[in-house]
Length: 191
Image (cartoon, rainbow, N blue to C red; front, side, top):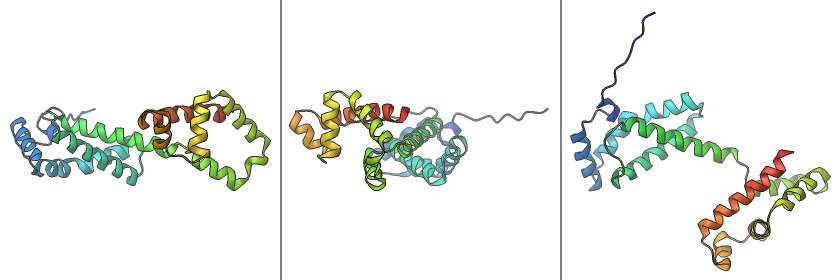
């Protein structure tokens, strides 16, 4: 059996740019010249998207969005000076896959608002099993979680106003809300 090894040069790993060319174009990008980003986009966007589709079994539109998000994030990092010459092709492809994982995770999570609407639509309130699960899950929550989820979901208060009222940062409160939701979901969805 004959194996064909494809030798990839260091420049190919860096979108066919030498380190000097990359650094010059990056300096120009910081000053508004888009040639580096255009070059990288034309060299790698389709290949990167195809890789996400093939390796992660992604839908075309989700892979496109994830790849575009990665390219925009990569551009921002270039402008901020956070990306140096190295294996840039690998870095950008890895970023695209990470953006895909985030998107896939978001699409697979069920927002409590949807559960609330489904409950109202399907009138689960008469279903004793569902009510028992919800009560069991609610009873496992601490008082802070109960108060936060009640204020946010039942009373419809925005996190910013809850944060202001409780002298907390909105980002910290958002993370706490997510932990509380995950705890509730863990109990309710285990059965």
